[in-house]
Length: 139
Image (cartoon, rainbow, N blue to C red; front, side):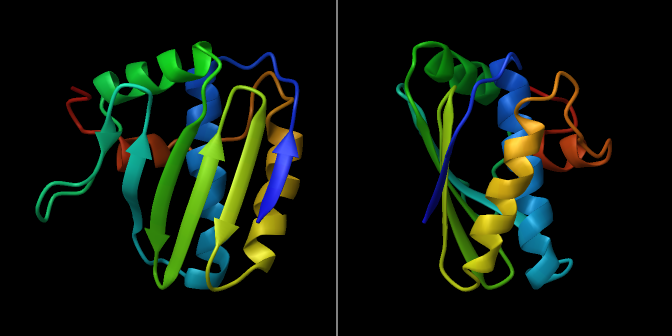
């Protein structure tokens, strides 16, 4: 498990997206083009998991709940799967922790990248990423 404490002027919605994007991007280095699956997101109000064979997407309601949780100074545990890799992340407004099962070097790569991204006013995000983790109608 690797951790990072940071100071950032970035809004909490952007922190969530940067966290998702770079966790996916760095894990894809070892897992290739396997789908990035969100397995669980836990806020103060709700635990979100996929239903049946549907993928869990970050709807506007889920994002609002995540932002509210971060605004209240609480953390959000999340679990992802990409290929054979299981990833556990814990995000707060000023800290991040990551733990992986298969390839521990991914933890260091994610931390190193987020150290540089969280402090930017305009973090690097691929335009094609958001549609993959949010519903097309963004409900």
